Length: 113
Image (tube, rainbow, N blue to C red):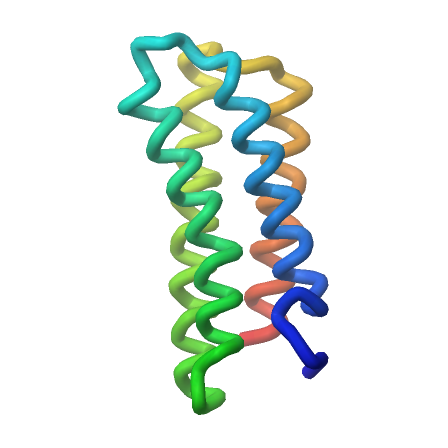
């Protein structure tokens, strides 16, 4: 491992995912501010946060556990992207970008675990 969780490519991609989610949800209806917008943003932030927290833990078992939490949060993101697409929220291009990053992060997490 590197000197910091910031050196992890999966963490860097998770940050890109979070930024993509924030940009996507910025165009969601105001009525969704406390609904899907909030849920998507919190789940996306949780992905990178759990990777970082796991990295800072004492044992590899704890690290893997937090990678699992990150994977779970990423699955939430993927589910909520499907819902937002079904509702026609955000641009298709932005959703595809976020989904692509989410799929990449998922593969990386599974590989690390």
